Amino acid sequence: MGYIFLTFATIWGLLSLYLYSLGRKEKHLKGEIDRLDS
Amino acid sequence: MVYRKQFYVDEGVLFGGVRMKLVDRILYIALVPAVFAALYFTFLWSPVERQMGVSQKIFYFHLGYAWVAFLAFFVVGFYSVLTLIKPTKDRYICAGVSGEIGVLFTTIALISGMIWGRTAWNTWWSWDPRLTTTLILWFIYIAFIFIRKMEGPWEKIARLSSVFGIIGCLNVPIVFMAIRWWNSKLQPILFTKGPAGNVGGLPPEMLFTLLFTTLTLTLLYIVLLRKGMEIEKMRFILQRKKQKVFDQFISS
Image (cartoon, rainbow over all chains, first blue to last red; front, side, top):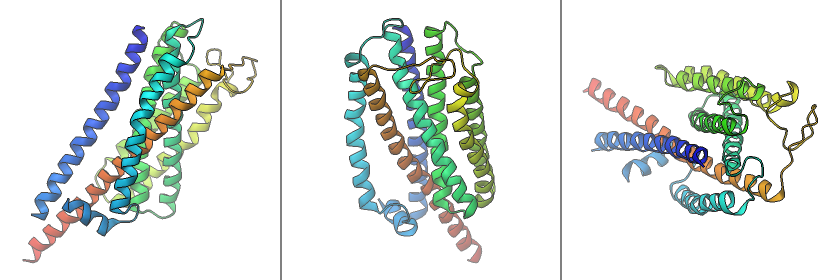
């Protein structure tokens, strides 16, 4: 059971990290584009 | 949003604004229940394997991630060939984002494979042909990502990274065939008879769960690919806007 938990914690952790980095990148680019437009 | 409208008017090669939103909405709506259904099939519906017990359920996600990573690398290979023929921003972006997702999925497959190895073979790592070739594949695409992070004109970076993308893609069939060519003692051949006669074979419930999980992860891959491409295109828009502001500043 511990191994299953470890597997899903890894999957959850890596996917969350990737989605977080995508979100940060998008927020940064949106901010920069809006700043140049205004 | 201003940027979105302007973005698709300027760059609208791949998606139209409204259509993309609708497609994305459908994909998100389909993905959420699919993930829950995959978890249900994995943990509640599929039978518990006699020898390994509950730990065997790692296998559905491990194999699913590995297969979808291969799909991602085939997409990289396809767009890398097209980029070498005629580099366009769309091809460059699609290959890059697909490569990133492929590395993410391969990392998950490698780590879940290590955990699987610990439960099934009592070792975290073995220099088995498939594990070794998968690790090589992972390093090739890490190099691919690093090349794309380099400074310089995107056409040059696109050509160089495409070479790595194609080399990595050519490695995918080697990973798949490794256990057949080098007669692996650890990894069973699931769907065909191997040279050692070690036929894997899966009961229908397990096969269905495996295919459903793989389909769900393919959906996740498509969602991530579309989102990643949208963000990468924004980067090009920003570069062009900055250049425009710089030119105006110089000319004034």
